[in-house]
Length: 350
Image 1 (cartoon, rainbow, N blue to C red):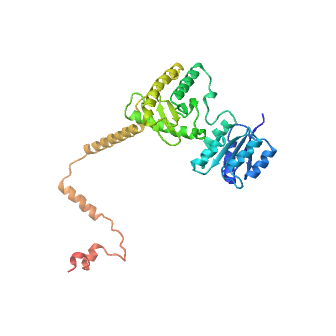
Image 2: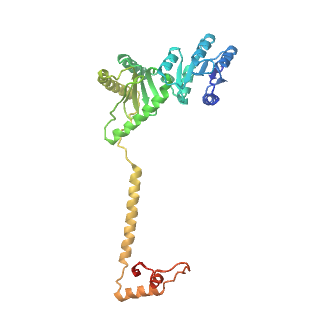
């Protein structure tokens, strides 16, 4: 099989090297070419057919959008990924309108970038495996149908069923900006994990919570199914005030149906137990043992005590004074007694 040809175009050499190294880490056979400008990139496309163009939005001589148009004229089937340091929404929209497969803002998330490359070239996804890589069992088709119907009924862009390890098990639809899928999922599953801990702290019998992110490019809702699965829904204004209650009610129904299908699939439901801090318990036990040992030793010492007569106590201190070893004197220093004899102590002054 002929390796896919990827053309990297960026006038910053360090960026090209970073992306090139990231591409080399993939298991797929790829042929990566670097070009520092749009003109050199066009020269390369005139020599060889390319499968994927990865270019900076701002290039010396011509913009990434202009380069994209010229490359499309020569390689109509080539996919394009653009990278930009601009935060302007108009520029981002212009990139999407031009037909770019994906775009990334600097600094680039390499995980998202590599996942986008695999999707653009229709390669087996090793960064974030999709449900297409799983066996198409009847139960899987049923789950996919449930999510697909929900997405259509609620006018959502996408809905995922994800595991607690951040893997998408089933999906329906796609994010408006698919290049953010890996990072978004990672952040949401971190929130999911924190929510599970809160549920344990407040002794919920089953995890029951939801997280809503309203506004921005799209609304996102995270809805735990159980202690190992969560539903993620995203769409345009689906969490508006007039829609949110209907959405949550629909999610509750979907949650029950998803749990039922998981049970039919033989997926064991995790036992939701109260979290115990064993380390603290071990430390506390150790402290108790030490205290008991010290107490026992003191008791033994007190049992061995004997009464001392007053004259024996006086004799002890007299012997201690007589046997005291005199410390060597420093010729440059006076003892308190010497200073008192010379009238240098504070009480001797008038």
